[in-house]
Length: 598
Image (cartoon, rainbow, N blue to C red; front, side, top):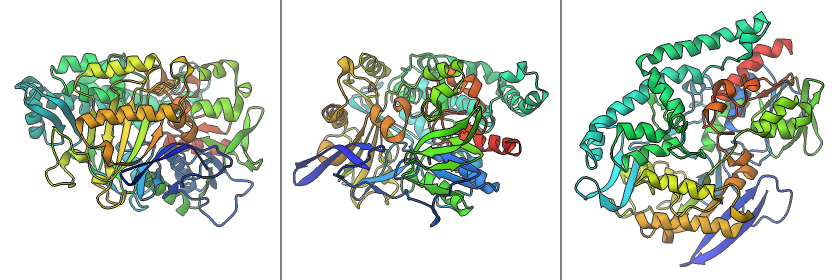
């Protein structure tokens, strides 16, 4: 592993370490700053890598590990090969700054399917989650609201407290909010079965094969059941799927910052504004989760998000699967229309009847398989997948909690309720989100970036030394390519991070002086380190033309590929991105259905 663009600065006697880019593809060079992995391992067995397995999984991200666990439990001999030094993909914990354990990419948990937690006994294998309540905090720089004295908006699971908080801005909205949440819950409850079932392929309607028609019946029944259960919410569901989130929020509410706070869920990870058609679905996607039986709840994983991946890996290896890190794949072995295994970068061949790829669709088919192996029309569609991303993730080590002027710390460095939830910065008005988006579209750095701040060490004491904390900043909007072809070099990364920190400083004076070190990951960094094409955290845009039976494209919607024995198991497959696990589980089911005939 090779750190590049590492800068060490010194201020007030402390080292400020900026780890701007960790190259997962580095092949040599002197290591400037160690990366301490708490969830990675070179191999799960003392046995060496074998030349043949029943199944090879490319990538030890959480979905690939889910596939491995299900298939190994079913009795197949499974090997997982990971190009990085650590398992987890984007659901990873890395101790980049000694003593501080970062959820370096994904950072909160909600979407992981309860069926997977149960089937794989993830709590037995080490998964522990801290539920968050309250859930959302939006501080104001300047007091506002109905009487000009409101300083912040704090939302929780307590509906009465929510009414009191929202009433600072609008009595009407205070009454409407619970109805809005109930509508969302009814819609996502109806959609829930679709997340645990494969989509039906359109080809089933035109296929001459009775077998394909028969195989598609369960998926069709699930879809029809979901539509039926929507009942009177069907028109609302259609609106969420197609309309701008801003249109929905404007109809339901009249006040800011409530609308801006809710609008953030419609754009997180997406190159969209709340005014973009389809942003309503992104909002739905982010409220589909469940933790500890509580719908819509979010939480922090003990030890960071690598704890999710480690628990799944523990299950897989306990049943006999093998996982190897530092084993990048060069290409998938094929002959004709048949897959035979993989070739590693070092030339090692691993033969298998089945290969599952947890890489993005673009990497899987255009790099590992090669467009020349695919039918021309499929290669053309894959080359034009929308993989744009506006995300820059900044991981920060601090020596004390942020002290928000809207709600000052009452007991020094003691955790207050708002420290435990998602803190929305630059969310006084929805227009701020759109302005940042438009600047990004012009290739510029936004003057007021959209910032979601979380402090997981406020609930999990294992992440940082006593008194210190881990602060994770999920920010938008940053272009993949800067105006005028300017590179994302260390200077540019730090310039953007300074913009972000200056924004936070307006709300929490003294924040910048509390910083011990920071890790800045722009869209190109997310692509290089985690293999996320375009830096897209969902392996491709979650837009209507890339969802359900069109994910990633219609011909590849059921995890199977034109090359027999090759399957897609990552977030680029249905039902999409987030730490959900469903693509991995459903791909494994497809393999088990096909395996006797392979």
